[in-house]
Image (cartoon, rainbow, N blue to C red; front, side):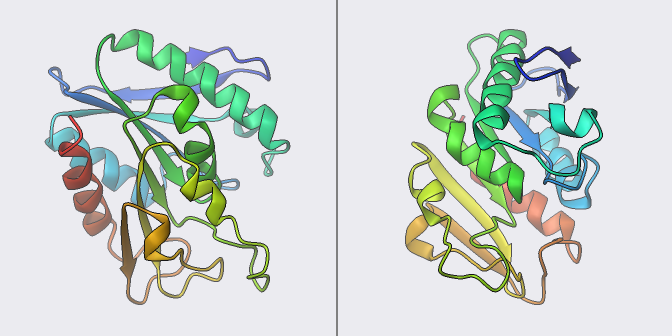
Length: 196
């Protein structure tokens, strides 16, 4: 499903189990795509729980850019995409999330979208080597409960337990969260199932 935004088109790949009780909008990081192993595992586990999943390719990635650019423009595009997906599922609660940069977008826009929860995979707490430049305020400002799943070896840091409703720290995992995608999917699906 191609969706026009103020800053170019985005793309939503929608998987609907048929009788969904909730819709999850899920997006990629700044250099990745919606076929990242953790995102696919989340989709599969959520579908098994009766949760529809819209994996969103943001406009900057469709243009071929590797960096998202302005956070304001990225957020405006996200809100437009979320509105279009919500129209397809009238009356259903919506959660949103993403990995890395996509997790930041999901946190920043949760209030505008009316999300009942945010899934933050590999949340980049700070740029590598710069813990003084914390982004924890984005987690705390989400206006919805946030599930954070990070690896304990993530060079972008690991948020504090107090900055999320639930924090899962995976031993031996780096920023890519590739060692056990099925575990990540199960954690997300279980947490979201309680928000229907």
